[in-house]
Image 1 (cartoon, one colour):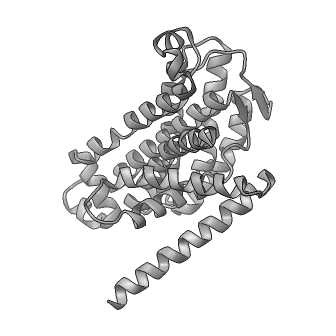
Image 2 (spheres, helix red, strand yellow):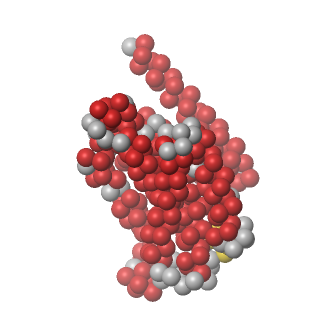
Length: 293
């Protein structure tokens, strides 16, 4: 049971980093960005190359985040500069990144990393964690990375952050302030996909392998986490980003429980789809009740 709980928090915190990125596009920008299904493995691909070449695992996290941010900028540029619809922009980048991810790792769809150091297993980390905390080392490090990712809270309080919120609510207001709403969108997409790629890098180092399809369904998990968090924890008691983190943990707990009670792991995608459908139905019912009231 202890291992199950630790596993839920490990996976929950990793996907929480990704869900923070989805929160920007879905809740703030109102942008259906499907490119996250490929920027997640993009972060893992960049990490794979860097770890296998002996680079510092922390540097791999930074490089993966930068690669994701660039991919997000490409999505934004296609949408803003070439006037391609938001949904199609994400699909174009998602499709193109599939091939690019394979190219980055040398054409292999699955690359093991068990013989290389990671942020969870290196001389420095092994030296600062006492033996008593060894079973919790991974979840603690993931939690710290997730907290660093929540610097997003500080950004949203800046002038640029307020402009980002304004673009999602009403682009006309931003334009009336003599600001380029298109540029603000591109910045938002860059931050979003940077966080998603960071999550992919963390996942890659935690699981010790790269798999080309590891990003499949990422957008569904991210949306489910955001919807759970923002609907269960409505109000001003906790920050929206904190609600998203909790939503991610709750979501992964539901999946873990479903597998624990006997559903085969091969049914994971079906479980994910059913959970997401239930979450959407509950969310829609709540909105109807609020409107009637």
